[in-house]
Image 1 (cartoon, one colour):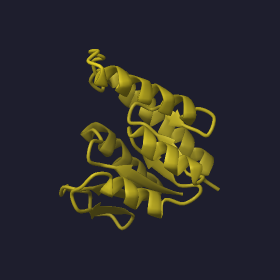
Image 2: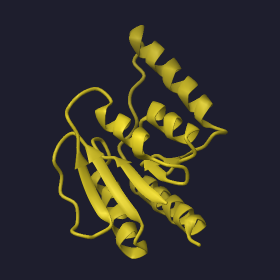
Image 3: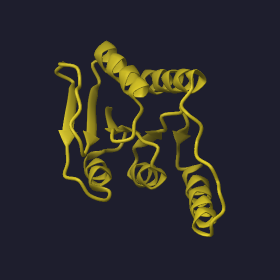
Length: 149
């Protein structure tokens, strides 16, 4: 397993959880973003900076993620693509993306976009809270344990 992170919008608290998990387990972790960021100096943690542009980071992740890998993203279309390729997806709020639920999530995303496009105020997601961080860490630990030989 390798962990890929859509890092442009990934909250700092989630990155810290991922850094600790990668250092504890030795699993490879790659953050992909279009702006520079600091990552711990560790042989299994990498940062890849891509050009600015629509979906450039997403495209790199889709291109490189393999079956059995884990992709951390809040981007539903990206999650759908990697799940279709056999990777697992996990949102920063600890919600797993699977072949069984990704279609419904895409439909809801599209529905909400339609509402916003017609002027309906849909609000956004609430700020990432402690419960979200705990749910993410717990789900990540479960997924890492399942991937261990």
